[in-house]
Image (cartoon, rainbow, N blue to C red; front, side, top):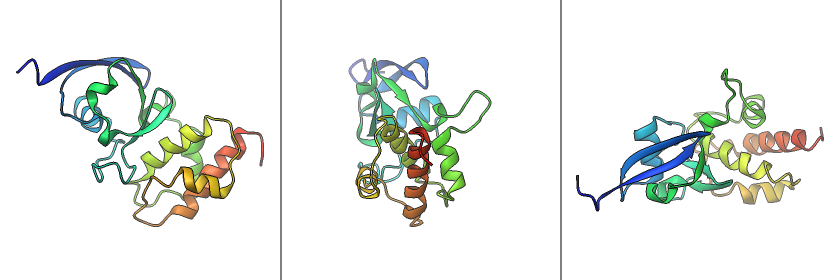
Length: 163
């Protein structure tokens, strides 16, 4: 193992301190999937176009396929697995996706949910047009955009005390 090709990456993933020796060329997607079996992080386009690999890093949503694993050193990373409760209960945005039938094939769902979680944490109330723009970095193969928008809007309104 060449010292220059591998680096120890220590970060917090879903609230737990983790360390792994990673190839300096590896993406964060690869590290999360291969080293930690976090398979909600999907391998889609691998060029930052589809959003299926979205994770929250230090409070901001990123496409992990174009984020090098070594950049995660010292960061706090959240994946879809980290949103569920201790006993597997869904959080509000996950439940809204179920309620609004926003999950079809499910491939894009983790990325959309992580982006939505990032958006909703701002506490802002967005218009439909603003939400569409904020979610525009994600592709849905099954054209479930209307249901996804309804789910995000439902969770946003509930978090902000609106019905």
